[in-house]
Length: 120
Image (cartoon, rainbow, N blue to C red; front, side, top):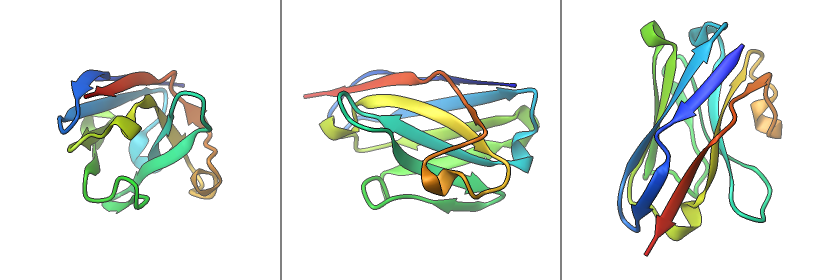
């Protein structure tokens, strides 16, 4: 199983980025697919999760970030708008089959991450 993220990069404050996560070896529609991030020097934190059409976000990104999926392509997206400097982090895609692990900050499978840097 592999999860491969892409789309990270350098963006100015207020800008947008779209991250993608392609899964290999699992059917993403059967999993809770989540995004986490780890800011420099901090612990990993939850960003978004999707199962079927249900989504959930923490207050820190609600209204700015949108998670979506294209099951035909086994791909999950994270659209990030109105980016702030505090959004700077390595963003990780994760897959949780039971739906119980992501709430604890854990998952069955993880990608290697993609770096997002928001500068002013």
